[in-house]
Length: 187
Image 1 (cartoon, one colour):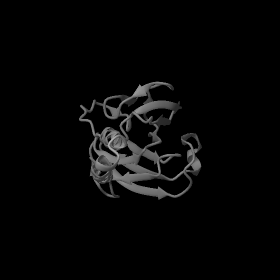
Image 2 (cartoon, one colour):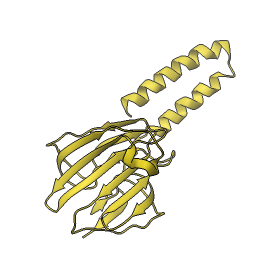
Image 3 (cartoon, one colour):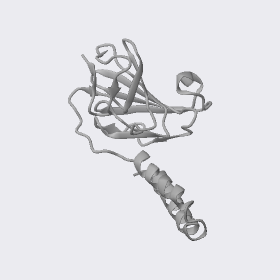
Image 4 (cartoon, helix red, strand yellow):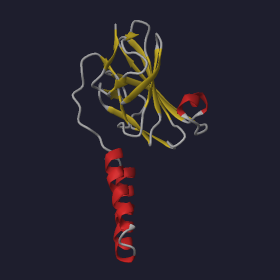
């Protein structure tokens, strides 16, 4: 679990203990918040499939020859993984607004460029209206493995995957996908 999630749980637990003796009925709210935080910051163990995999859980909201956009709903896991083995060529952190996910060109985002023998993969983590923080776990020059955790959008929004020329997406708009478990791309 992320440090931010643990901090929230500690805060909610302290508030629960204080409120329990003052307004016992209100303390139920803090138990609910603890359970939600545990659920939201979960990191499920997954078997990573062969091939280029989806970097995030969610629903495909756009796909063309080279770009796939995944919207993460509130119930999706918000950890993003590397879709392939490779080396992090660079990481860009771009400032901006916190608009709804479909206006991502103006939103805060992290872009992670991963290079392997087949070309350059681009994974973009986009903040949204509720998602105000993006955590990045990789650095330029780092060698990473497919399925390795590369980031998290706290109260997430959208992930974008762009692929090299020799690949094509094998998923359609509207499909639900799982990070690491769904093969998204073929040669």
